[in-house]
Image 1 (cartoon, each protein chain N blue to C red):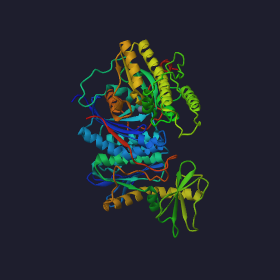
Image 2 (cartoon, rainbow over the protein chains, first blue to last red):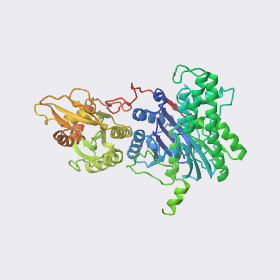
Image 3 (cartoon, chains in turn cyan, purple):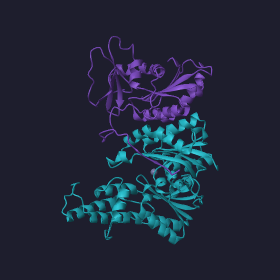
Image 4 (cartoon, each protein chain N blue to C red):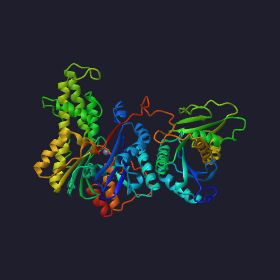
Length: 366
Length: 234
Ligand SMILES: [Zn+2]
């Protein structure tokens, strides 16, 4: 054994996750009850449905996690829980469950920022996986999912500088919406990737929102362009504009899926690589559900390699929301003595870090 | 508000009851026979999550009873505001799990009707509770709670006595004032019903216990409990 055992609870969105993580890295158990099936019918997350599922599934998830780890709650050294950002009704379930476990078992409670959890997924080791070096600092991390899209610099543990974030939709949201336009299944990310892999022509040109020199992202213009392009393609095939039963041909769907994905990947990868170069990063971390996208991984891997900087991408199950990533971040907070009190409450819009300019202004006392 | 402080001798076995369905957090200690040993009522507004666990800790100190001697958890399941109910039920589930003790979900509506017994005289008590900013819920003895959409009024008999909780300005003043009397008896009613249920061996399934929902979420036609499981490789 090396290092304290953390019990971690994640319930910020639509996955109920509970994990046991040793020393902030080694996973002993990581159980996730995912509600994707519950939300597929509505084509997106319904907050009230998500909250109801958390309260229903949290005890079975805890029992599975404890059984997997062969541990009791009394064996853990700290209890970590996501307290924001996320859906208020969902966060509440995990927070109150976790802090009560900590109180009854007299264990320290640690509040974790969900976004910080996505970053720390890069430190996780599966049971039995060989030891591997921690990602060296400074690092640049790109976190992309249905809920978040941001680029951050870490100069040390728990030290974040937000470089840029989406000014409108999250990248994963854009995948969902364009997937729906193309008549593909929910969630849109995997469906668009599969469709794009079938493209034989790569001529579909979608706009890129570079937003000047900034590291910010924007996907709403791309979404609008995608709608126009899909409408034009449907008209070209003689299909009624909104007849869901009249499907665009497979070839056209594939080419449009490819064009849309290429635009998203181009912007995400270009900005990440530019940040890594400008800041002299010693590693690049990719996380969030969209990190499972093969085109994004391949593009970043190639460019990181050309730059001579290692790219760290957790396996897909650790990129999507899960308890283990909260355990990894929570263990660092626990080690730093950053403990929460029993009045810990949900912070639905908790920020990860302020931007440089804002942080500098705050330091100078403005 | 606290009952007989220091009523415990440290070895006494007791029940912990909580309710977060209303704007007031209720935490109570009761005997296994259903007598109230002490209670705390806190105006929580929407801050149930901040106040509940610290309030449990304080009450436990005041009644001088040991956490390890809790024999069961009683929790109000609503109907009521979802935010509060989630806080209360998540807390109650963790308490029951951590202590290895049974959990009993008691309808807050049923407990409030029990608390209002004696108010009605010859008539029946009709309970009104808020459901979001404009709707209300009607609770009567022996019937499931029903939704009263904004703008509509409940059908009342001449002798019915209306009790309107957390409905200032949205129900007759007399009904709102009556509710303040009923509120003070909620802790005792929860303990009484919960103790009887436990004594009869009618505890709830810890995993399946959920709030009493009167409506389905907006845009959702049928409830579905299925989720997909994934576990990290061992
Ligand atoms: Zn996330």
